[in-house]
Length: 131
Image (cartoon, rainbow, N blue to C red; front, side):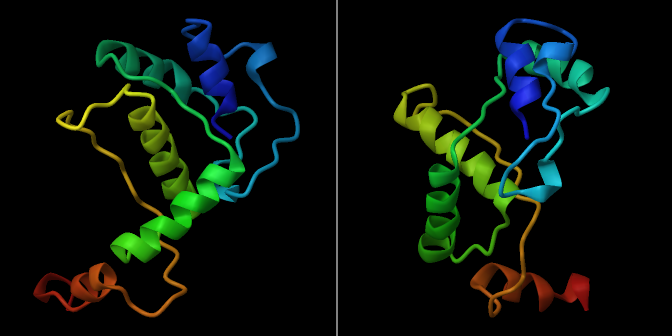
């Protein structure tokens, strides 16, 4: 989970501390279940501070809701870590921490590819660059 990094960042700690770590993390997204994320945090902390960003976490219901919305509204076959990122951005927008005219980059890197091709995947896999 991202909880160790969120915890340390919220306490303005440039390093992960023992109290931030999670011994047996649980969650829907196995690819980011890191109870101890390692040395990455110190570099992310620096970048996030310099860019006035934030670390965020969200709840399971929000993840599942956004997971479904991405497919139904945008034909995106995203995975759970991408749904987590989108759920956090959605919450930040609802809290007015992100405005309509703000530029936001959300990295959606883990498509599941378990459904029939969507507009996005079909276009990619049939483009001249990939054939």
